[in-house]
Length: 372
Image (cartoon, rainbow, N blue to C red; front, side, top):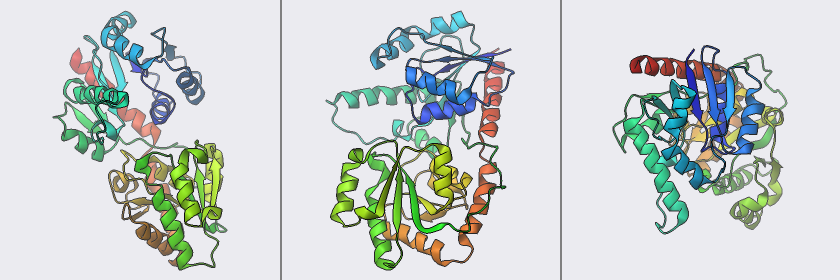
């Protein structure tokens, strides 16, 4: 039975842990897995999402979880551990580290590793990012296989380097979700849900201008933005200050952190979900909206059109009026909301975690076979 080691040492709670956990929970029993971890909160998430599985074990290989210590350990000590574990393959996230004779597959999730705005070289964070960028670029040349979550991300990487054995595997959503969902007939035609973070590429200010445009166009409708985020409003100071200066702060409802079940109930009864983000390697929030029975509106940039296909409305990125135009189209076109919801249910059938896990295991098998 092949033994696969998952290098999760550089992962903290966030998208990388969520994706890796979803895959691990759906990998078959034909392989055994050892997950290397250093952050206790990341390990807790792994265990909670995956649950107990006899073919998955966890190992903390370093005494310290400091970034520098872990990086140095991965550079110098990883090959010896892989040999000790009798690993047949190692899967790393975003970065390549020396693995000795053990073949390595690298899964690329972060577009900023290949297309990141430069800041001052004298900032410690910039130096750290340059090191991470180097590890990602090294993967393109040295990994036995490079997997990307979108064609957009793969194309960005190709501008940096020729890619060794590169392929795209779409991540997905829970395959148990089906078209049995009931389309909300009493949805709030003035409520717009947003899942976002304070990062500049999310272009949150566009939401304010979009909302103000809607209020001006149809003032009698009680438009409301519902913001779901694990961060408090204090983390969105520019966003909140702009909303107050534009006089529409009372039209924003701060939901805070919500579980997926809670988000499903809110999204299901909302007019639509809007993502104004200008940079995504894959637009997962749009697929989640589809699973919740909520139409999505995204920008026409990076991986967004690729992620949603014809199952969402697409606005011009960075253009508040274009987003408000799409919302008005949704409001004024009979049956469009229902049509988009039905298209969304069909679209997500082709992007399930089970399908992604099967494709990953096929790659593992091919790489191990070639190396033998």
